[in-house]
Length: 315
DNA sequence: AGCCAGGACGGAT
DNA sequence: ATCCGTCCTGGC
Image (tube, rainbow, N blue to C red; front, side, top):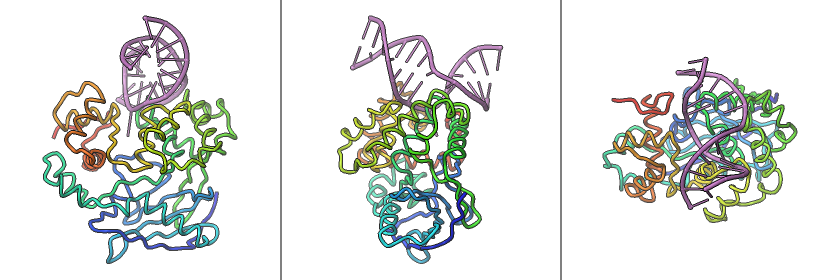
């Protein structure tokens, strides 16, 4: 366990409109001890490029749209580390993006209108790196949310790094190296991940072996995806999720069996395949389809209209 | 008491 | 190319 103290503060400004809460916290994400929403603050952990884990306390900037970041670490970060962290967080929380054009185009769309009003100023966000997203996608495979949550919890307890700061007890994500110190039998027995154990090892192996040196932001979508699919345990769905989250590309829509059900209900159509859903969404929202999906889903979760089976309740 | 869930793989067609 | 059985586990 690491005790961290507040060493640095960053002020990250952005453009209007900006919704702090829904930009740093997403209702649809199952709770993990990677982050915690407490009052007006969002605490979370993050690994710097160096691999060092830090704790963050995010609050809304006063007077200006943006995020105030208190950085908790063992010792103060140097200017280079701070610059990297600032760049990373601006990217993670979409601070250099804008939702204005999206609102202008689709603010009156009958399906989006309500979601945009409720979540006004929300940006897409993803604080995890590629390795971390792929691990989350892995525990989502072939199971229900509750069990995904348990699996990730077990993995964090066994292989994550416990961080204590500002009264919070959170975990930094486990690293490829920490997973590789384990083996299939231990992962199954202690983390209850079943057949996913060998896939977790292969993902960790890939990221311990050069994938960290690949700059996926410099590859085109298809090339990047083909590289990810080479990893055993990463299929089309996981690779797409990872890339769209990581590259923040809203023109790609990823539909799984859960969002297929949701959009069948929302658009009042009985979609027979995921491709049918994707085509309908692209036709309706074009290059903003990914963002539109985010708004619809987050609003349904926030208003409690999605049940445990991923179905939209009648309203 | 089974059945099946927010995919991926490998082998068969 | 597309289809299908199988993979762990524990909620429901």
